[in-house]
Amino acid sequence: MSRDLRAFFAPSSVAIVGASERATSSGGAVLQMLRKSGYAGRIAPINPKGGVAFGVPMHASLKDIGQPAELCVIVIRPDQILDAVREAVGTGHRNFLILPGGFAEAGEVGKARDAELQGLIKQHGLTVAGPNCAGIISLAESHRFGATFLRDLPPGGGLAFISQSGALAEEVISSANRMNIPLGTVVSVGNATQLGIEDYLEYLGNDPRCSSVLLYVESIEDPDRFRRVARAVAAQKPVVLFMGGGSAPGARAAAAHTGAVLNTDAAIEAFAAESCMIRVRSLRSGLLAAKGFGFFPQGMGKRILLLSNSGGPGVIAADRADAEGLDLVTLPPAMADELRAAVPPEASVANPLDLLADAREDRFGLTLESAIRHGGGVFDAILGIHVVPFMVDAAPVIAKLAGLAGKVPVPFMHSMMGTLPGWSEWSATMESAGVPMFNDVEEMCQCAGLLARYPAFKRAAASPLPNRPPALRGRR
Image (cartoon, rainbow, N blue to C red; front, side, top):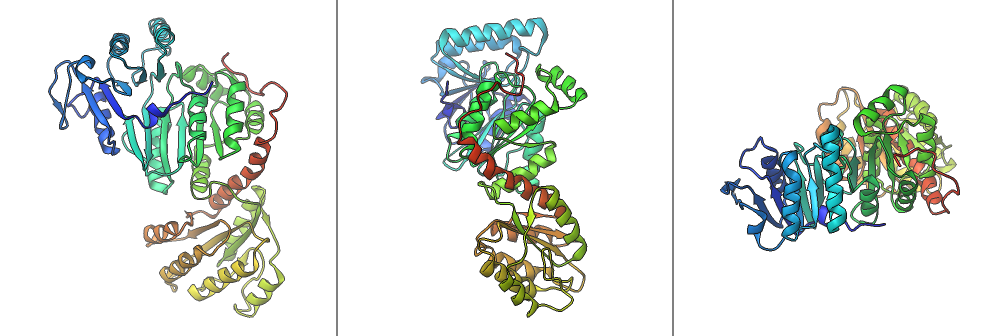
């Protein structure tokens, strides 16, 4: 059953039960992050002592705020949460984001508390996110929102990250800011007393502002529903799965962390394939996929051109491209003839190209222009490799490539190797032109390989669901 989760991503008003003027408290952190995110709706901080928190007047009770808030965020002691929910229900609140733990993960007392919360959900028709989660961030331009005690906000963009680990949410936000990954939505699922990963995935799959989704999963409640939802989303946009617990030690750790049912690596692989999700086996690979899909949300084909000015990096890139299932196709004859007449005889006019280390903006530019003229229907992507020797000024090369980027009809990636004193500036210039940058040619090829897997999954997702049980065991 589909759920309307707009109140958790774009609420018109928010009550914070447990708000505080102390910056180091959970309630203080949530209030500060809500304002830092640029939230423009009504904020109603709740604290029995009243007062002011960070310039916002606090109310002693939910009864004092007048019209019920569309979302009620709860950040108080676990033993007080159920009473707060009852008070909120009595004042007309129906949507809850509960951040503290102390429920199903906290022994018999916690399990009893969780059962009582589920009873309130059923009795009053509530919708509850969490508990035991780090919150939700949604930085869509039309309605920015961040109810979280995570330490920072992501840079914004069409990518979403849904995670069963709050710590990994923190790390992905940090990496997104460092790697310029266009991450705009972060969901920490927590215990998923009611709302699970598939609920958020389904909602974001229907949100046109979301271009792709990265998942961190340890356990799945209902694999059959998850598979249906994932396929429906993958038919429109990429879904990348990083699932922990594929090894025996990892499975034991996942069982202790989220109550995950033991599944083999082969079962996870088969489930990802039948769900049309692109599986990655490390957080770093997930971040590479996120970066690539952030720039090219519909992925790319397998036929690539490696445009390099150095032999060695071209060789290792060719090896990695082949390992990733990419095809280094033969240069079109017209392109090869054109380049042989223009570049030094020592250059290698093949795929990968080697324009030689002393290549400047003229040689890089004429080669890229030749690929644009003659590569239609031949190349699905162009991957640049650029070393910067001491005798060449890289800035004019970067300016030339960035200026031509808008004319490249296929995905264009670029990597730079060596000592790069102007990396930040050069990277910003290229990425502003729509070209994702890497300082590792193998990671660039890995990213391209992940993107090249999506078109086949997209086609498969539009076909009928396999008439067999899911490969993965769930908790039901």
